[in-house]
Image (tube, rainbow, N blue to C red; front, side):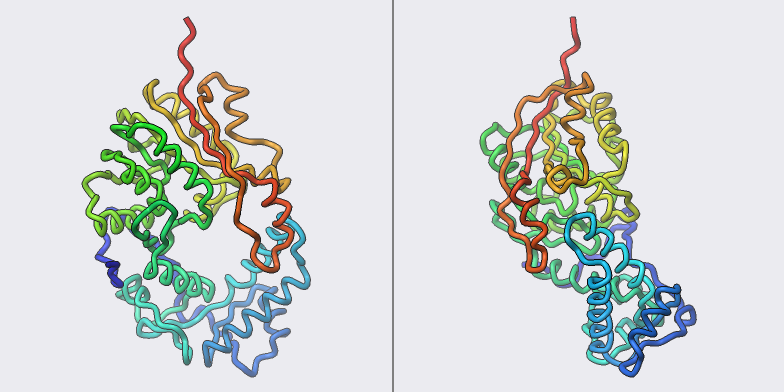
Amino acid sequence: MHENKPRPAPTEFKLQFPATKPVEEVPAHITAASNNRQVLKQLEKGEKFCFEGTWGTAMDFYSWMKKQVNQHYPITDYASSRINRVKMVQLTEKLFIRIHNHHPDLAKAPANPWLREFYPHQSDFMLQFTDYLGMNGARQWYEKGILYPGLNHRIHPFYGTYFPTRTEHLELFDQWLADNPPFKKAMDMGTGCGVLTFYMIKRGINHITATDINPNALYSVAQDLAKNGVAKKVELKAGPFFRETEGETPDFLIFNPPWLPRDTHTTIDKAMYYEPGFFDEFFRQAHATLPSHTLISILFSNFAQAAGISTEHPIEKEISLQNRFVLLEKHTRPIRQKPSPGKNWLEKIRSDEKAELWILQKQSPKA
């Protein structure tokens, strides 16, 4: 059974939590009597505001502001969705709530036990409103857990940990594992919530190294491994790509990299988007580090091409332009997930998008 209270984090994980601000740094307030349009003008000029009164006041203003942004920056395709999102971030990063004695200082605000656990030595501070919304959503996923296809137990992603919300690529991977003999030693690069590691354990792989640059992800996986009694099968390592795994000789490496090109600023960004040079650096290090017998499996999607974001597929580019890896297998699966209401622009992208599983191996040296 999942424990509602997380065990203390080992110090080596150095967990990351939302930044706080002193109360005196946000002197302006939004109340039920505030003029929303006037507040919005001040936000656009860079002024910070703190909600005062009730949780309903905060949610009402947030919903109203989101409607204003949608009206001025309507979403019709992926590019316009990014513009809309950037504008919302610019505004919401100036909205705060006061946290007093580890509880939001708003009537009827939802409590969150993480406030005490994340900030044990702070009793009065400001927190971005959207950070608290994100914390509440993350807490619900953490407590409820996620049951992925083919696994007989739930995964409980800790705060700030990336977890898949679609499953076609996971099903491709699980089926491929089922069709191949178990590997003796495997590596899960960029493990996130650890779902791929658990698929490998299910398929009889008992020696796995799981890596991530996000300490919250490693802590999250450590908790789930312990809950399921399989912690001895997995070694967790922090660091990018192969920095902490040099000298290891896995038979198999699974890599579920970001699928979309974009600048990144946070560890969650880095789980979802890749910057220029990301894939070339991965393939360069993989070629220099891995033994020739290692099979490399990459889970990917052609979303960027389907959405018109990029004409370049980084894995196809590597195979066609470099002489480092040979393609052994490629498997695809259509995307079943339908766009949520209000996102009809995604329908065409979904119809063209496919989940992909690539199996590569180092090129044999020419005689």
